[in-house]
Amino acid sequence: MPPATSHLLSAIVLTSTILPSALGSQVAVKEWTFKGLDIPSIGLGLWNSKDKDATRAVEYAFDAGYSHVDSAAAYGNEDFVGKALQSSDTPSRHKYWVTSKLWNTDHRPGRVAPALKKTLADLSIPYLDLYLMHWPVAFLPDTEPGRTIVDQDTDIVMTWRAMEDLVRANLTRYIGVSNFSPRQLDTILKDCHICPYAHEFETHPYLQQQEFVDWHGEHGIKVIAYSPLANMNPTYKSKYPKLDPIVEDPFWKDMASRKNVTAAQAVLGWGIQRGTVVIPKSVHEKYIFENLASVNVTFSKAEMGEIAAQDKRSRFNNPSKDWGVELFEGLDDGYNRFFVEEL
Ligand SMILES: NC(=O)c1ccc[n+]([C@@H]2O[C@H](COP(=O)([O-])OP(=O)(O)OC[C@H]3O[C@@H](n4cnc5c(N)ncnc54)[C@H](OP(=O)(O)O)[C@@H]3O)[C@@H](O)[C@H]2O)c1
Image (cartoon, rainbow, N blue to C red; front, side, top):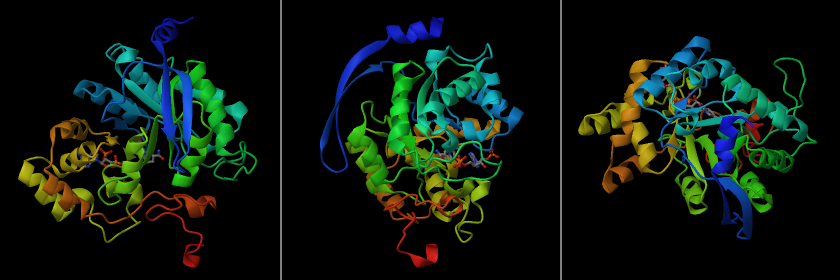
């Protein structure tokens, strides 16, 4: 057995958790889980970080003091992230947190473990801390490049079952979901033996979803806030052209100057204070260092109220139409089948 695996096995404890489902029923869960590092409140995002830029970004992050990276097979750069993780300057494996994600073409149960093993080989690490189902949608595998066909024979519970086996096989410490609607999350909660540790979804000051965030807190599921800098991701530029880039938004510039921090630090600090884990992406050393300092930014109750009033309910990442599926049902700016103009 490789040394890192035996390290994990020695840390095993038996835990018993009661997880109430969104429908109100209670599910008793008794499974083996690992003790160890809990998810750090800030991590480095890696979507759109290309090749060597991804390697360098991870190196800058470890230099700055991050201990958490947010990766995914679909980002196409896990081998470049792995180059940084195998460097002798990187801390020991158990001292940092790695999240990765199962892509939609690998939802069929027989494809789940091979997909994770490929991610581990690319990242050059023996196990993940957290493996997420990237989207609640299965695609047919092996279609032409660029084509997506929804696989109606594979549902999220079948995929979740295969993901539970990954925890039992010590390939990941925890499993979780991403981009789920309340109804989809409830489907998993009703049936899970190993239940979601975390839910990663889009939330920031322009899409606060406070009730949904609070619901997770009440049910012991961590929220990982993706795109925590709202519309700073250049791929979101055209979605709401009238909204200022958040770091140029007069409200945030003023809030930041009151605290003598940058607007990005203020935005990220708010995300952390509300209890979400933030994963800002950058390939620039300056921003990577700057963003980590957001852990020290705090807001008064009155300021939290002012920020709540700034919610624009604007979602930037919604591939419902492109994929022909209903995503974010029941959530702000989600798909609503009854809005004819949405079709
Ligand atoms: N689960 C999912 O479906 C999902 C979806 C989206 C994102 N994510 C995860 O969440 C991470 C973060 O989200 P994101 O990449 O969409 O966007 P983001 O982190 O909110 O914003 C990234 C953009 O902000 C810029 N930036 C970073 N720090 C800055 C600062 N201090 N001042 C000014 N600009 C700054 C970056 O510039 P430079 O890069 O040029 O430095 C980049 O263009 C992703 O990388 C990914 O890991 C997950």
